[in-house]
Length: 120
Image (cartoon, rainbow, N blue to C red; front, side):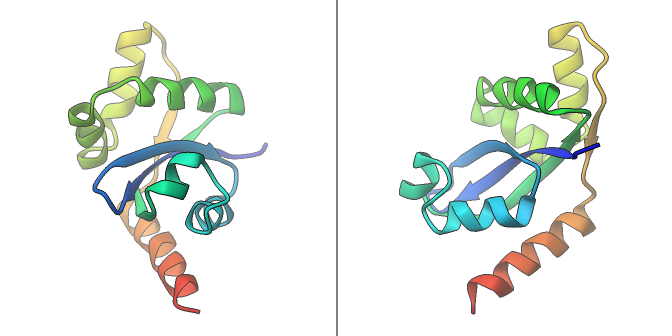
């Protein structure tokens, strides 16, 4: 099984960018180098705020779209308590999709790796 991650990135203008990937390190590097999304080319990414793992790419795309349709206030709730995404998504979509949130320690390690890479 190939893991697919949905993520929210903090950009330098204090905005959020949401996307999916199967490789968090490589994808962030693309964003950072202006080769990811058009949005992150203009609004430089700083770090991952939250990451979730989906069962498959189809679910990841649906969850990504769902997050992108939410207000910044709701996205901030998802960042502050990453388990809320599962609750809100399943309630709004009347489903029972499994969305595994990445723990903060692992997320901090990924951000640390990315920070060290950017200093090279």
